Structures are given as structure tokens and as C-alpha cells.
Length: 248
Length: 316
Image 1 (tube, each protein chain N blue to C red):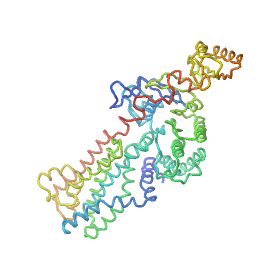
Image 2 (image 1 turned 45 degrees about the vertical axis):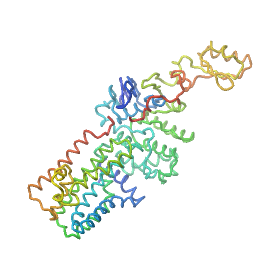
Image 3 (image 1 turned 45 degrees about the horizontal axis):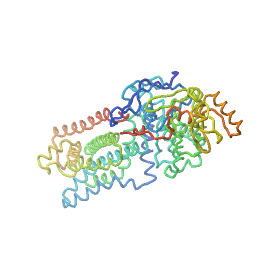
Image 4 (image 1 turned 180 degrees about the horizontal axis):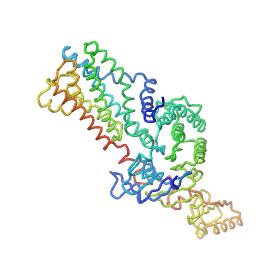
């Protein structure tokens, strides 16, 4: 079987930015595991165990978000300090191929975290085909959203230090304020309205509903999927127009 | 194949935060023929890197037209990109890769299969004397070796047009000559190289044609021999003592150097001055002006004099 040039590029990016650095420094793998597990620890202790279930469901969403913030830092560093993006732009590799390949390479870093949370998922007794489909779909969309956001921002930043400033803001806006680690109902009314502007709110609602933590009716579920697709599709469309692949 | 690899007409680029009226390149007209090495020379801030980045589809021009390999590179850059490759100024390979991985992965990214990528990688690493360090991490290489890896990555491709922005900066003389030999090999393959450099000996040695850029415009263009013919004083006479400065002014342009004078003159005056010097028993050397002399005459300042405008590689 021959591999098409585009897929060869994607596979090479996964190897180049994912497998090779991890083989050289396996501690990278702990990086994306630390934040979600820390959140899970705090929320469990603070709630005296009552929100452990929500913490497990939210941990996977946060892990996918971390892929995006990691991508943002890597791509900014490569573009600004090494001029790697300029090398890639002047080549057959297109922006979508670069985005997909680099996003998948960052996903490799999240595998230990995902394995831990999937283990907890099974331990909770949530493993069934229906919840697995919802979980998979929601996580893929959050991964796509976060990666596109990271890629797009990275084409704007002029210094890797800017990513240090933005990453916590992104985490705050997409994983702390939205009800990723707790039920939406725990937020005051105004905050629930604000939370509706984050795609992770819908992803969390869908996952929490699929495992029976906060069941949604069919109409609300449909709306949540549409919102999640809308945010991701909208950002992809925005990125296609506004990302600075060629400097304007 | 089009007769010109690059055709730029009235090309202009103003960076968003540049002072009013300051353009990195302005009304730039340039035609780079297909095949061979085309040298771009100029001081820091002259506009070389801006031009390379526009032609390599990394930067949009503010106005003007640009054809690269017969294709409109401003409107349809995606049709140009598969046919070009670039070593950007100050670029470095990803430091966690080995030398071999950096070159091979770049080929695989461009669509080469694993076997062909390995074959090309082996060849180019041999050519640039990097075979001995092929399994060494980039992070453990010297700055010069890293620069050679960047050059290797690009030379190993099959791109029809290669952009090399100061590829030999930081290399020792031996390594520079290895890169020169590799570039000459690429030239024999009828590919086109656009080379920017601060080393005028390099530009003169490698380039079939040259453009001298100053303040965003091409102020001199042609073969090295044509450039020599176009300057007012194409010959240089070096004198070690024996003359007063006033005596020399009538021969051409005079500069003081250690122990004597450097006189740029036209051929008859240069020969006359050399004859006079021999009659007086003064140590004299006569020869054609080199590119550095031409640069000095045309621009009025040495090539390593800094421009006050922002560096042309800078992104405001």
C-alpha cells in the first residue's frame, strides 16, 4: 500500500513532533497528565468526594484542551525562534496538513493522561457503547477546537512568552469557568449564561449526561451537539481566513 | 519552463508598524533567470530578506506583481509552494532531532517515500561533510554545523527554485567552500538558486548574475563582469607610499589605507598610475575592482555598515 503525500506529511509530523521528542525525553508525557490530575485531586478533596465523578468526566476534556495550549506554545516557538513555519510554508505542505499533523503529534503526549482517565471511566462503571460514542465525539470536537485555536494564535504571536500569558487565560475561559469539573447548575444564573459561550460547556454537558451525572433531554442534547459543532466549525472557518500562514 | 524563475514588477512592502513613508522594498523591479545562481547583495536593512520572503510566499507584498516559476505568487501561492524550498535567515533545524532525521523528515514532509528520503539524505550529508555526525542530536552541534544541516535539508529536495537567505553565515572558510561546491552541483542540475549573502567573495564566486539592493530598490544588476564595467572606476591600484594624496586625485577616487593609498580609476588612468609608481620604485598592485570595491563605490559605504531603518528581516 502506498501512502499519499499528504498522509506521509501528517505521519512525518506526528513522528517529528511527537514520537521522536518523547523517545528522547519520556518526561514530556507527564506534562499533559499533571494539570487534569491536579484539578481532579483538588475538586475531589474540596467536595469531600462528591464531585469525583464530575472530575473524571472533566479530566478528559481538560486533557484535550491541554493539547491545544501545548500546540500553541510549540508552534510559536518553532515559528519565531527556529523559522520552521517559513520552511514549511515554502513547501508542498499546506496549512491544514500542518495543523492536522501537529495536532495529532500533540495528541500523542496526551495518551498517558487519557489512559488514566479511561481507566477511571471504566472503574466508575460508565463503559458502555452509548457513552463511549458520546465521549469520543465530544473529545474529538474539543481536540479539534483547541488545536485550531492553538494553531491560529501561534501564527500571531511574536514571542513564545506571549503564549505563557495566553495559555492560563485559555484554560480559565475554557476549562475553569465553564462547568467542566462540576454541574452547570452549580453556577449562578449570570455565570451559566457566560458559560454558554464556551464549547467545553456543551462537551461537558454531553459527557455528564451520557454517564448519567446530569441527564439532558433529547432536544437539549441535540442543541449541545449543534453548538459544539458550530463552535468548532466556526473556528476552523475563521482560522482558514485569519490564520497567518503567509504573513499579511 | 519559463525563461525567468522570478519576475517582480513595482514590488513594494510596507510593514504595518513602520514609520510613515518607510518601505522595506519600494518599486522593486527584478528578473531572475531560470537556472543558475542569482545573488542578492546589500547591507542589513536593504530589503533582501523582505524580497526573499515575498518570493518564497511567506510574506505578502503591499503592492506590485510577482511571478514565480511562471505563476502569480501573490494570488496563487499554493501553486508555487510545491516547486520551491527555502533556508530562511537565522533558521535552525529542530534541536531534538538528529542530523539524519532533520534532513530525512524534511524530505518525507515534502512527499518523498522513506527509501528515496534515506538515499537523498545519505548523499547530501556526505556532500556537506555531515555524515560523521548523522546520528548526533542537533542540540549538540556547533552553530555552523546547524546552518549546514539547514542547507542540507533544502539541497536534498527536488525543488526547482531554492531560496537561500545568508546560508553560510557563521560557517568557517572550509565549511563555506563545501556549501559552495554543493550549490555548484545544484546549478549543474539546471535548478535556480536565489542567494542572499553578506560575503561579497561568495556572491562573486557563485553568482551568474547579481543584484545590488539598497534602500529597497535594485540599484545595480548584471553579471559580475557587467557590474564591474558599469561602475565609474573598474580598476584598483594599491600604492605603498611614494605619492602625496594631491598627486593622486586626478587619477580617480582615492582612499587612504595602511601605509599608502587605494585608487579606483578607469583602465588607462590605472595603467598610467601603475607605470608612474614603478618608475618611482613604489610598491604597486593593479587589478580589477572586486565586488566589495564596487559596492563601496555605488553605495558609498561598506556592506557591513548598518542601515538605520529596521532590519529587513524584522517583523514589526
